[in-house]
Image (cartoon, rainbow, N blue to C red; front, side, top):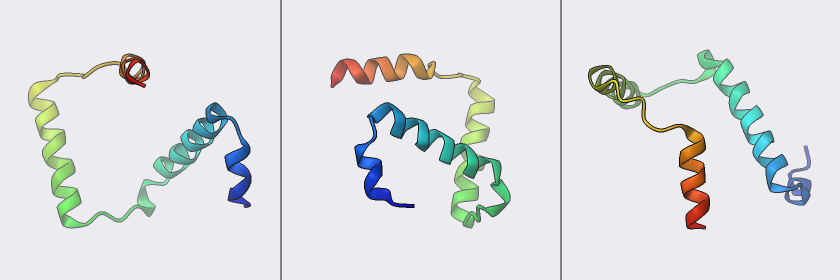
Length: 70
């Protein structure tokens, strides 16, 4: 793959490619090896979420706020 041609793509298309790449990585969870510290941190965050149950904000709202600041 020639990555220099990626710079020629519009930003939206590059973001779409990043999303597709990320989804392909997430689908292959068994290939990701976590350190003990990473596993502990993920467990800690999951436990905090389960206690709090705060779903956070919709991604669209967060992106809109970021775009306002740019």
